[in-house]
Length: 329
Image 1 (cartoon, rainbow, N blue to C red):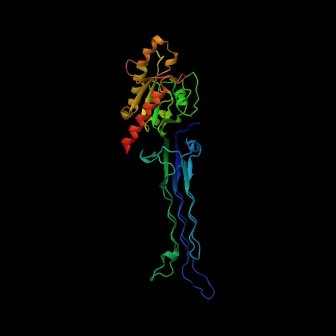
Image 2: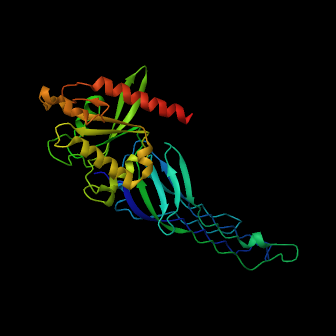
Image 3: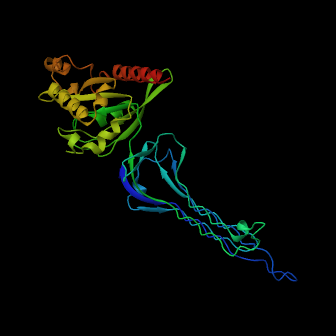
């Protein structure tokens, strides 16, 4: 199951109370203050784990709390710090405050950590209030309360190239052809219900990551079909590959539909480097191969089944990704 958006409540731990205590020793009936401080509450910490791919763990675990700090005790003993609440998420997770809509963190680097909320500070024991003029303070400080936030976690997968196409355009078949990925392939729409990633080798020790995005339909930017829940995954890609079924009744119109959906969701998506490939040319009769040109709008004509045009496609995509990486430097 692929879960890419969840809502959770997080709470940092309360600080422990300071202790009010006086020394009681033999021959020292009225000893000085020796109450220890309370321990700090546990923090709320996000850690990025590269082996994770979904937010499934938090679909039913909606409240995550840091531990309370231990109370101070006599003999100036400080309370134990509360246990941290560690939230493990996959790379590409965006943490957003639901109350304000503010993006608090965009967690893209594997093995990184982000402290969202600090635990409440432990209260001071009466030993800490002793002064030259008040040598026997009869009070201690309570611990501070932790903080609470309602969060939205959103996963946007990280890939170099996003495969974009209408349902049943052959995206999963292409991904399985050019990489070692094994997405589900079948001859009906919406076979792909979650993004799939594949690593593609483009020679000379270069490789890039391709994401197979579930098929889009007209109105996807408004949530129709599988809708905007998957359009978000295209935002992080360096380049896009529009895959058009050459056997469609109107391939050029299919391409226009895809571009319109992306542009309606975010104008920035149309600024990305793109390639257009006409797929499934193996099922076209030779006299209809010119149909795969999409009225001069396609860069390549390919068949993921027969392998026709695949080396050229991989080479072009690799060059596009390499150029984008060099621009980042």
